Length: 198
Image (tube, rainbow, N blue to C red; front, side, top):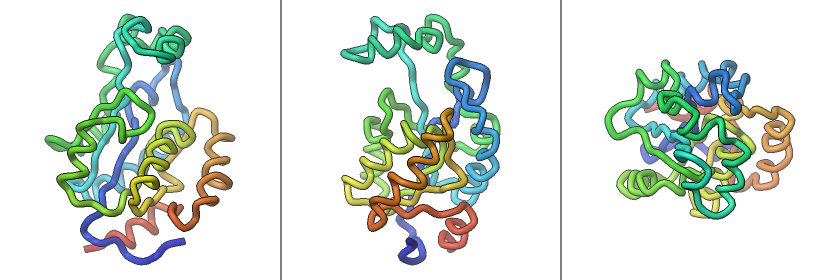
């Protein structure tokens, strides 16, 4: 449930809208095409208050740590030994919007694992975070839960998030996130834009 307009301390966090997920790779997320116009609309509304997180893959499984080694042994085709590093770039419409200092890199599901993001947050004085991007049930939700734990007002853009597993996406939107209704607001792009006016 919405609790009122956003103040000027709102940050839009775009999760993993990269070629790696938009194009034909082992991690291709076809639904990304459907949410892209909404992610673009949110990003264009306040480009200076938008941060783009990129999921960075290792050179190979053995250069990872702990259970990430096992993970990347399974997904070796998306390690840099086999993947063109250009695939880690933002998709074209968003790369044109991203300004200097607006891109942060992470090697974890949650964007809160990025020191660059933590520094940006501390410097911005933000108290509200809007989340868009992919995948709803993995990197987006991990970031949302960390934001909840940190005490932020959290907005999940329902029509600007997607997953390679849309059943899992629906589980987050319809069941998991609503369990925390006092801490997570699920809003449409239009509703967010209406609340995020000057």
